[in-house]
Image (cartoon, rainbow, N blue to C red; front, side, top):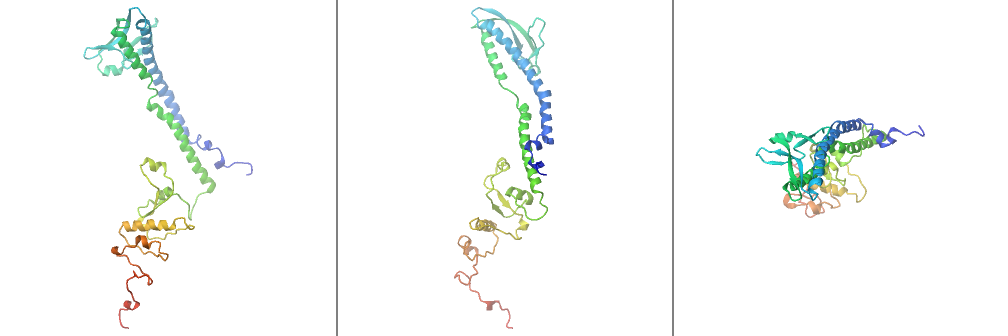
Length: 310
């Protein structure tokens, strides 16, 4: 009807966002964001930020001043008996007490690594004391952990959204093109080399085309131009090469002759303009020229074909 758009002429996102793939990706993204990503980030922020803030406050109030003071620092006792300052991977921050003091417990990773215990130790903290040096190293190490950002397994659903939209857009374009042009039931159809190869799955001779290399070919490590290949059982069928002067019909025939020669098979070439004879004629291979006006033609007389005197 006049003044109305068909389905194929509407905006592309109407066939993408409301597509089942788009809905599935959105639901997956919401699930991962709500039940996995946010709780994980909040938990990691609580662990790393709580311990890091405590270390920073202790460092400012002791090591960064000119007075020697006593600080309570959490230490873990390793299986070999060595005591070291607790890192963010060694502990889990518990809810604070009414007095707002820091509460910690060993993490599963620390228990798995056979850490014996966790305790707060009162140490002397001044600029040149070993405790300040160890505290400074641990603050820097925790800062590196905090800068690691979002894990890869959380970025995958986020990256899937634009990928799904791109795939939906391509799918919509194909469907819109099919709706506008209709579906071919019989007769010839114009195809690209990739489409032809998917349909025929040929294993015989082929033609190198000028089609651009697809992303799939690059991912599979294929180089060079796309080859349009026919099935070996169909090589004896008819081929029709149509094109204006200079479009490459002779080049396609040369490609066929080169492949036939590489396979060690024979071919009969009708070459009145001598386009292919200079390149492919090899007498030592047993090639014959059947042209009475060419001196390279072997002697032949129709009488030699007579088998009896009658």
